[in-house]
Image (cartoon, rainbow, N blue to C red; front, top):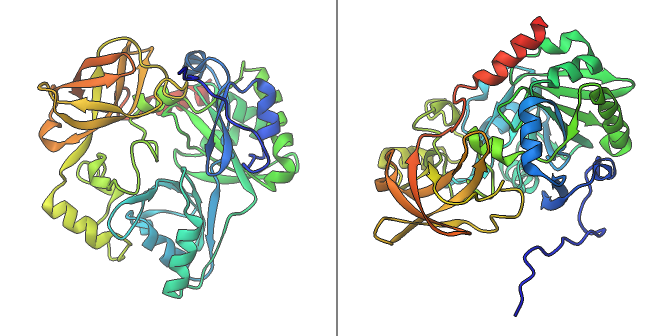
Length: 400
C-alpha cells in the first residue's frame, strides 16, 4: 500500500478565514494548517529562504488566526488577574505581558500575549486553544461583572531588523518610541489600529492589531505591502526555526493542558511567570504551590541532535513527536519541536524528559525521520538568550 506523504488540506467554507486570507494567498501560500479553527499560512514555498529574510530584512505575516478574547467591565481587572499566574498589578495600562492561563490543576490552557488597554480593558491574543468559553464559564460561575467577547480585531506581524523602517513610513518617527512589550493606539489612513512592539521571533518586530478587521483586512495588508516594498519586504509564515532558536514555546507542541509552567522552564528559573507570593488567588495557585514544593518529575530541555537535517518544523518534515531513549534503549520522553538551524548548522529542539536526564551534556538517543541519532542535552535558548538583538537593532534604527 502506498502512503501519500503530503496529502493536501481541504479548503472549504467550514474552516474560518483570516481577514487577511485573500490578501496573503496572493503571495503564493505553500502550506496551510488550521489554527484556532482558521486557515493559517505556514510558509510560501521555502522556509529557509524566509528564515534568512527574517534575519536580514523585513517580513510581513498573516497572523489573523491570533483571535483576541476581550475582557471589559467593572470586575475586568480582578477577573483577568485571576486567570493568569502573573501579578497584573505590575502591568501598566498600555503594557503587554506574555502570560500563561492555567487550569485548577496548574495545566497550561493557553499562553497568550496580554495587552492592557485600559484600567478594566484587556485583550488576550491567543495561541491555538479555546479560551473564550473557558473564560465565559468561569465569569458566570463566579458572578463576575465582566463582558467577554471576541471583537472584530486581527493582527499582522512585521518582523525583522528593517521592520522599524517600514513602521516609520507607516506611522512616523514616534513609533520608534514604543518600548518593548508596550502598545499604542494609532490611525493609519482612516483605519484604527493598536500597534504593539511584540512578535514571535526575538528579532525587532511589531504587531498591528486592526479594528473592523473583517471590513478593512485586505486594505490594511495592501497598505503595509506597498510601504514595505521599498524596504525589500517579503511575506512569510511564522518562522519556527527562529522561534526554536529563541526558546519560544508553541502551545499544542511544547505545552498543553497536561503541562505545567514548572516543567517548561518558567517558574523555578524565572519566577515572574508564576508569582505565588501575590495576594490574588489565581486559578491553579494551590496546585502550582504544591507542585513547586514537591518538585516536578520531568522537564523540557534543549537538545542538539546529530544526523541529517530534520527540516524547518513548519515544512511538514516533523509530522509527529520524536521518541527519546536513554543510551540503553529505554524510551524516556519525546521531542516536541525540532529543526535544522542554518545559522548554527545543527539540529536543535526541545525534549520533555524525566528530571534525571535534564543535566547539561546528558547523552540521549532520539529517533528522527532519519532513524536513531545521538543527541545531547544543551542549554536553551540556543541563540541570544538575553534578547540583545532586538534591543540593539532598535537603537541602531533610531540613530540612523
